[in-house]
Length: 289
Image (cartoon, rainbow, N blue to C red):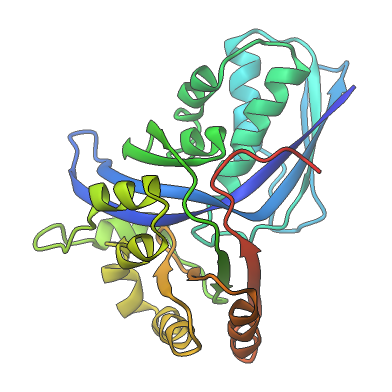
């Protein structure tokens, strides 16, 4: 018996950091949605009591460093599962890109193993478990559009944003999320209009969404990574309606309504950025085709 699950990448339409919490995490408020760039995970039932993770991508670890492995181990321990699973990961989302690839894999593992091991858990219950694996996992469990608060585990689902094309460009050099948050100065931040973004999404107001894209972590990542700032400038110059860095970076995305313009931006960026993608914005749960 096996199960298939899709694990889509996420982008941040807004990312705000409010304050440093007593537990040393940051209190965040961010609106995230999904795009049609996804890993595919297959889950095979094993009689042996073990977790096996396999992938052809050399950057995907096969032990507890892998968030899908951690999610599987959490379920096994919490519900005393005595049989095993082989998890095959077809990796399409760039690693360490600010697109929640690892978190989305973990969420897919929670959904897939819930079916494979017949646990009968709701999405809400899976999201609560996901918060023990990683900050973005709760959002990724819902595989949709949502406002995330707290450490990212408090989820309020939203409608999908207006349909559009998304151009993603990831520079070669990675970014440490931990170091970005450690370097963030909370004083005098220019905060996103989170409520305005929610209203724009609910009204399917594409221009309103574009106008309110904002990520406070750019104040740290851009000065330290000139290539990220260059990609943002180039995307705007080549005709993107709005451009923003996703998460802590380094991936930058641009929104456009016309496919031809998205293709033009893609071709223009390929000259100095190897990892460039043109995808559709999803924003709601997608079944495997």
